[in-house]
Length: 343
DNA sequence: AATCCGTGGCT
DNA sequence: TAGCCAAGGAT
Picture (spheres, chains in turn red, yellow, brown):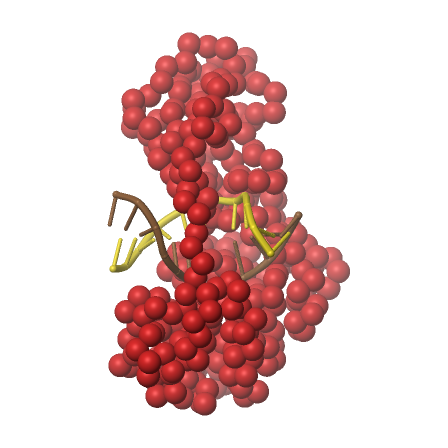
């Protein structure tokens, strides 16, 4: 039954920098496990459009896993800035170093061995073993969940229905071309069997689709409702020396924006207390920064002053003009910088 | 098991 | 616009 899907994939596969094109594949070229791993980690909860440029920059700068393993943490975190879910970048480095130091620079080729690596969970282990190593593992991501829920007209809500959907997905996975199949279902979910107004008219699985027959496809998969997001507030402090150097901090490895560069500031809560990093005549900027994270809205007020020559507060770092690159900042910190620069 | 963890695009 | 959604993992 999945042959109709593979046929559709052969005609419609989207070009992506980590994919082996039809001509190369016919010539026997296999995907590079390093590039498949890197793309799959970047694609966790992230769209192909957002990933594409990041992938090209990473693979240009670090062409193989050994090169990435040798990179300084700051450079990797800076290159990841803006992509979100920064624990992925920290685990990416950990994983690259384990593969380099303990696996002679080669990725393991089985699901179980891949699953042991940092940042590789059930989905990513299945995706790498299927796509890079041609093993019949079953990928289960948001796309596959949606396609299976519709194909079998399953009305039980996620995430409770996940085990059932996994069973259906496993039964649908072919022994032939499992890697192409995995990419085919996900392409289908991304371009045809979309969350809203699916294009059933051009779907290769229209005929066997039970939701399509019942007319319920637009309502599936059902999901348990999410909690509303609270709003938190905070103050941040941007100080620049006359020579252009700026005062920043490297955030602790755990928690929100862990390991990333940022501006010193207060905690983020309902009623934050001001916390300037050193004594000075701070002035507040007009306007505010609004940003929404996974589980709360944030409103930031920005304070600024000149950074005196001899001032270097504990735990903070001073980056001189050429060492500071705004593109190394996570988005919320970048928004604050842009507001400050436009003052 | 439930919570935490980013961001940008789309409707 | 405000919410939803994305090739999830760690704890």
